[in-house]
Length: 127
Image 1 (tube, rainbow, N blue to C red):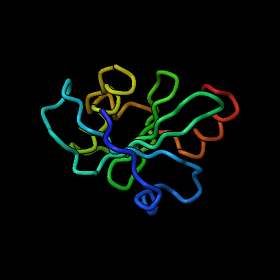
Image 2 (image 1 turned 135 degrees about the horizontal axis):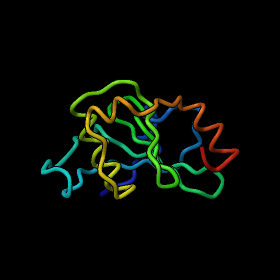
Image 3 (image 1 turned 120 degrees about the vertical axis):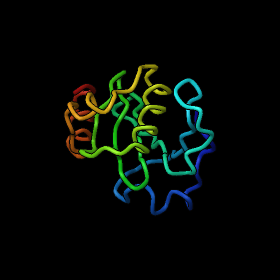
Image 4 (image 1 turned 30 degrees about the vertical axis):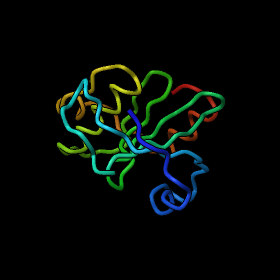
């Protein structure tokens, strides 16, 4: 459920400068969870790795909101919005083949800092 990979020029200004990311792709709505046709370029997936294990960050608008890694979803944003919830729902279903949390479940998920996840997952491979 991904669109085209973005070029290095398109990535500039979207992905934090300190990240060594090569692949960024637009997230498309998953028809299994929404009838929406497009997210209008407001949701992107940033491909990363920890060791040899692929990891995928979800960016909704200008905020990294979560990470899919080793069949788990890690929440990285303390907020909630209906639009971002649609992005998360499509992302989790596409990446992990799981149902996304409803608002109450979302609010109960632990919020991890991005730097904490990057550090711990790089060394341990799991959190």
